[in-house]
Image (cartoon, rainbow, N blue to C red):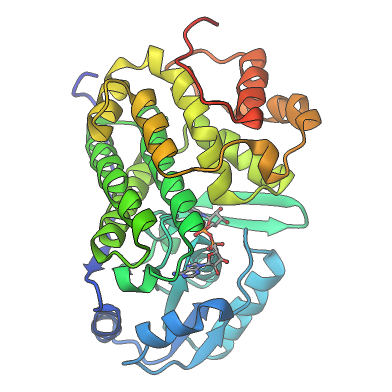
Length: 358
Ligand code: NAD
């Protein structure tokens, strides 16, 4: 790639530190001069929330968190925030929780401090999502980009191992897809390469010991880098596929990314040699796909969309919906038949082999 590009870096303050969530949250609340804080969190994470917010006062709590942010939840939370004159939103949780805070910020402009407890990376993007009935709408707006993010590895010890691994693969997917997304550039690719390396180092430590501070720190660091690269590069072929599978067929977010990623890499890698070299380097393997297959095997990543509730009979329809969404930047031309074959392979979940014949 020639050095001829436009790169946008999104401005945020990051606080990294294990065991420091409470002091870092308090520092940022003071920096913002906030006096009426609204906490957005799921009641499932009450212990994490108690730790992270132990040094500040909360004026209002919203725990109406659900995947893909139903519009009714957003509207009720927006009204509560404006009725109480809230001046700072603090979200504590994964992508669904950050997503609800973003929905409030979108219409009210109230800044967000995000305490991230999974590897989904929503806290590092200006992308919002809302669901009305079965229709999910997404968009980007800098109003929803959290002004500050707090990462504390100790808050993630309770994230179940299987979900940690799927969420980590979701983060690796951000990095891999950034290599060929519409605004891919050399800066995104550096962030993405280091993101993959850090996640591939941290996730095996978490599998061995879910309370490995080092493993959790590496995974959070890698998740941030991956999300920052994704936020700048945009959605590539992989995200377009997963967005349709998650939105139309209600498949679980992180697990769907984990299941689809190797097939997109197998499809694109023969036509993206520089990206393939970067991914291989990050994974310490001779090719990107070999590295990803080895990592997935080491982490026991559950394979196959069929195990996530996706019906084989939906493949034709899904590929019709996905086909017009594939970005022109994709390194390999994609036909509808390619998508059908890719989804069949991802549905069955067999270990993907390099694919350069179609
Ligand atoms: P999630 O937020 O739904 O969390 C998954 C589960 O993990 C939930 O049951 C939650 O209660 C639990 N959990 C979270 N942190 C925990 C912890 N530390 N300990 C124990 N349990 C914990 O899932 P997710 O994968 O983080 O986020 C998925 C959602 O985020 C999707 O709706 C997706 O569209 C969105 N997302 C948005 C962006 C963006 O840029 N806007 C990026 C990535 C994901």
